[in-house]
Image 1 (spheres, rainbow, N blue to C red):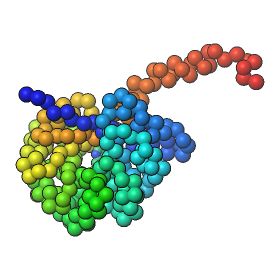
Image 2 (cartoon, protein in one colour; image 1 turned 120 degrees about the vertical axis):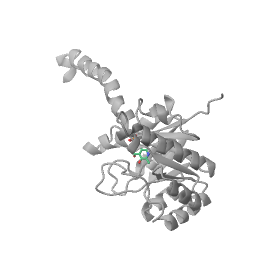
Image 3 (tube, rainbow, N blue to C red; image 1 turned 180 degrees about the horizontal axis):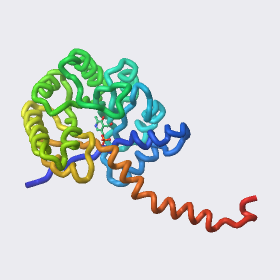
Length: 249
Ligand code: PXP
């Protein structure tokens, strides 16, 4: 049986989180995006939050120029951010719920309560040829409503499954995702998934019906720190070891 390629869009928000910790210019997420794509990422995902805690407007503008694969902008349904997204015209927007106090996106969109606003935003994005994905729980009613809004994709929130991974409820959470994916494909929605995924828990997710794209950030940026530390410590030791007093003045 021929395998369909599943795309990896790397979420680089936490490169920006480190930059914002000092308020300086490094590490630059735009540089990170180039490296990710040079090493096989199929696209780049960022979340321009209303509080600008990590990704900044300047990053979004530059990423639009630099990203060669898919550029996926995560965003809340806020007038200001919708305007920026329409002006930037990424390949895809993923509409997510957003609360100021949260550490990361908690749970999927309430598509029932926001159906009117979502449908209006979908029409605006489609007028600019921007694909729309809705970040939702693997819930059958939410899938039906998502389809009615005219969205192209749904992205299943995999966070609950990831928390359950290795516990007795893992099977149940995985079954919910599988059933939801079957339903989405059956009614003509395209399927993405993300949140909390790492190199271990992603494996059963790869069996999800119709899965086209994964959005993975935290585990990739976390692993990159440990993979990169040995070389960077060696580099600093070399600088110190090769210091000669007359070079310093
Ligand atoms: N997908 C969506 C909609 C998200 O909000 C996030 C987190 O920003 C991710 C995927 C990536 O999640 P993680 O950083 O846990 O891999």
